[in-house]
Image (cartoon, rainbow, N blue to C red; front, side):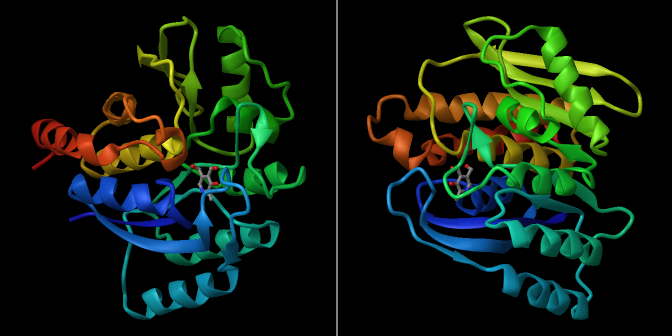
Length: 281
Ligand code: PXL
């Protein structure tokens, strides 16, 4: 069985980051070790959340894993809790990766044109250092614009999206998958760029009118799980778009859901069935 380490926060309430990655990756038949970057009472959209930064725990945990001879097929980073955590995470990646370990970086720090609460304007440049190590990175449009210094636009064309993709690749990432891309009002999906082959790819599915918290984390966890189960990047990211949509569709009737995240629990059986159909045995 493949094993990954998911390096992001535990938001105790409000499905996102580890509380999404662990169940989704596990349901896909991949072992998911977790390395929490912080413990928060809730994700940062709740008022008055509390946060305990775990930067000082990260290297001791990783060193202990090393002494046990553990290896990882992928290291997946998401939300990082502080400026000073970035240098530690870079060291951690160095320590835990071997030449066959996939580095998958979700620079989860911003959306809808704004940084999440708690980050200062210097944070995107720090996150860009983690992205520079990635074989695959999955920014949304806000994150890509903040890291590249390009203007954030709500309405855009393919040239703008390609410029963002190339800008993120120029930071050092090999493959860039820009999420939340929508060229038509009823569809949403991704556009990707492979800096080695120069190839672009796109995939779109239905766009539901509601926006929910934590859907980016569902998308990333599904993509990592799919890649680990032997899907091509194209298949894995298509599956991620489709499953994110299924989670949103499973949630639509709940008026509280925008806060508590998508009810992915209802859709997990669909993911398990689909991965059984399409993945390596
Ligand atoms: O879903 C991304 C995310 C992860 N972790 C924390 C967050 C958010 C988004 O707001 O606040 C703590």
